[in-house]
Length: 184
Image (cartoon, rainbow, N blue to C red; front, side, top):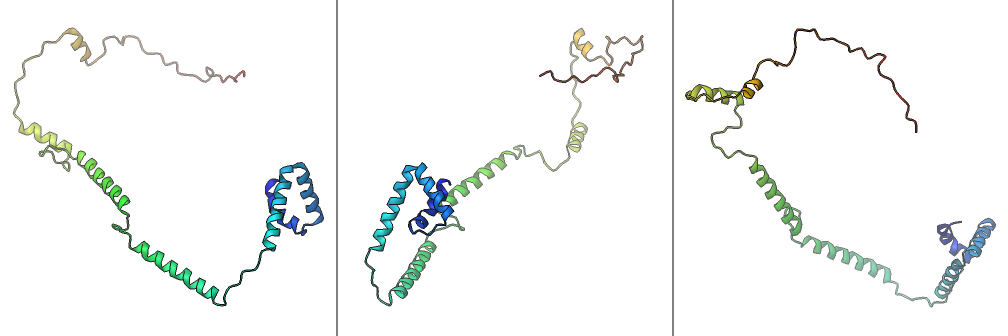
């Protein structure tokens, strides 16, 4: 028996309504847990005190008055809830937080809009580039002095590759790959 089962059976033990097997298990729990006996004694004293209390006499209309009072309290609580100020169903705190979030979203969205009035975001980039090349006059550019390393980087072919010997194609890896088991 665990503590939860013990606590569920305390009142049945005090009232002597347990079966024989449950009573034996309960007694065994009491022997193995001395603090449980204190809890049983405390509950027994509480139950005895409640049985010895005088009955409270009420009028015949007590229950009907109690029910009407509860109904009246419920109506008043509903009315006080409706009187709270709300903005579109939000309390003032949540309405202000929501407003700040909307302002932040609008501000962030504005940041994505380009500032250049000549740029039309719906136009195709290729047509924009083609328009610029046809409309802009060709300007003379002075020749740039180049070094041999610049020319080497712009060479159409790589001068380090030796094309005189054919490349060997040894890409057969059928027997070259072996899986090794981890020695751990």
